[in-house]
Length: 137
Length: 137
Length: 137
Length: 137
Image (cartoon, rainbow over all chains, first blue to last red; front, side, top):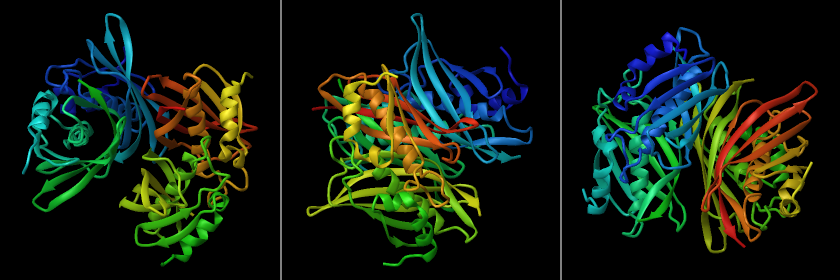
């Protein structure tokens, strides 16, 4: 597993990722993978992972996927993103696979697919598509 | 400020809301207001509130707005929701105003508008539109 | 009813609007209203207006709302837009009310609400939120 | 190329598809492909295909992909769908590939990817993700 120091450094400054117990597990060229447990502090009313948890790691994975394709002097912020929830967030670990659909100078279109891992395998629980915008540092 | 005991009870079981310091401050007929500070534990890499924070309270406010219009024997889950981020989440307090756009037996279309409050007033930082589905308990 | 010549001129070049029988009926400062009949040539399989009809006038109303706030040397294109359909498109006339939610130099966040008019009044059939980007001519 | 008679029959009743010159070219198990030319009657102001054209065939391909997985006594309607536009709709032919992401009894999550074909190949111009709901006939 290969991790870009630049992405790791930015990820470490996202305190919400630490609060959620999220980890950056892989960065590629236009792809980023983030995992998170379903902590007892991140649930909705039925005890499943809150949509906000799934969204947060999905959004960060998508954003960092965009960042892998940008210059050292740029950051990225989310302009908009939509999540379709496919199944409840239950299991041992959530895994968000972010990737760039379409790079661009002004806009980067990105997606994330989030899976819940259990002993039985990985279940697709959410898909996100959004737009990231570069911000000069 | 009027708060439905039923909504409060469900909200209290959403551990993510407590983790984020969120509070249920008003419930009406098809409307719910939730506030949250921007805790040092909920930021993105630049120190602003993470999109996941804004999303989480916006999603919960929208979902609970739907729940105010449903029977006692039903819960609600998010099928999909999209967020457009209008400005950075910076300020003293975030306020999410959820409301029902279109009630329905099978689907409830909802929206949330999230504002960041500072001494200078309230700034519109995000709008969400989504679909909630009723779940029988 | 006040109509900006610049918006009218661009609208007249959108041949799809003519194909759908759409008319530009009002332009304001950050707002545009477009109407269209439900032509027999624009239906889905049950005879109601196709989602593509509702989308098309909603998207154009939103885009032109953005254009009202831009310089003479700019056009606008849709980066992304989401539609929630609230009720079937049936009635005498569809009316799309586009407006700017958040102007910006790089992105303009816009919305459209589409209503179906009948003798009984106006029924809310769709809401759209999207992002427009300025393009220099 | 294999085409389900049931899908073809419903498609033939969507008059908007005929207006746009669209053709159903393939139906599979959870997949549907629709093509359309960029007619001079379906453009936006710069002469490219209107977002409404791209949306219309993308939405129909996604909806019919859902219909391939449903019983004979059901129809499908769009609850919501979002489109991200990646490039201008220019070329000889638009091709929309619809597929089911997640089937369900109450909701079917679907996607469409739309490509513009030219002599130089196929260019990805739009991606859509949405929710279809079954309707009993």
